[in-house]
Structures are given as C-alpha cells and as structure tokens.
Length: 195
Image (cartoon, rainbow, N blue to C red; front, side, top):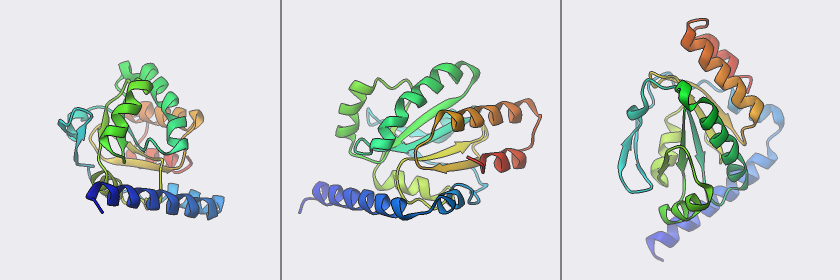
C-alpha cells in the first residue's frame, strides 16, 4: 500500500472515529472538552502554506488569532468557512487574524481553495497539523476544532465542533476587552469557557 493511500485510510478512519465519538457524547461532555484547561504556554509551530512555503505561527504575533482546524471532507468544517471569511472581512482591519489549518492533502485543499476564495491564510499538514492541535492541551477528538490565541501567542481557549456567529462574536468581544485592558487574561479564559 502506498504511503499516500495509507495516510488517506488513516485520515478517513480518524474522521469516522471522531464522528462516532462526537455523536455519542452528551452535551455536557462536549462542554467539558470546550472548557478544558488550555496550555498556557505560547503556541509555536511551523506549517506549509498552499504554495509549500513554511510559515511560522509567530509571523502573526501582535494579532489576536482564531485558528480553525478543518478538512475538505468535513461538512461542518465547510459550513464554517463563510462565517470565518466574514469575520476576517469585518475585523481584519482591527487586527484580528483568522488562520485555517487543513488536516488534509495539499492537492485537495488547493482544489477546494480555488472555489472557496479564502481571505485568510491556509496552512496544510496532516500528522503535523494534528500535532499542533494536541499541543493546545485540549483533547482533540475530531474536526472542526478552533483555538483562540492572544496577540502574544498564549492560548486563551478552544472550541470543539462547528463554531457559530454568536460564539465568534463572544470571541471578538473578549479580544477587544483584553486589548483595551478592561479584562485580564484569566477573565478572558473564563469567559471563553462558556463557548
């Protein structure tokens, strides 16, 4: 079996397992995952963009970030993309940076990106992308998965599952409060546990 076929089989199996596990979780179990303690260290990684250029996460230091893990074969992931694009349009000039991390094959992501017309950076990695998610300190059980990161690179929160407009609005509000000095990082983390 070729390496590519093996990786594809593993990704499909992981997606199926994540879907089955997610479908069996009760609402309070998902809430427990979303409120799990995040790693308080800086999130540091390098992944390739769609052109194969390595991009260091520190490149976006100084900006609050919403980091969305997704895949072309994940229906909830695809449903989130218009919301994320809209959020980047509305809040990008104020400094917010959306980043997409595709846990997928680069060829598939490139083809999808032609239609999706992303207005935010897309990084691609298979095992490497999953390793990045695992460094957050939050149990990673499937896609989509979103990390909320402070301008200095420290983790603020995480969300398992499809993200919706009201949750994005809470994140944006918390970023604004934090950047204005009206709230502490611990208060932001506490507020984001409610996502």
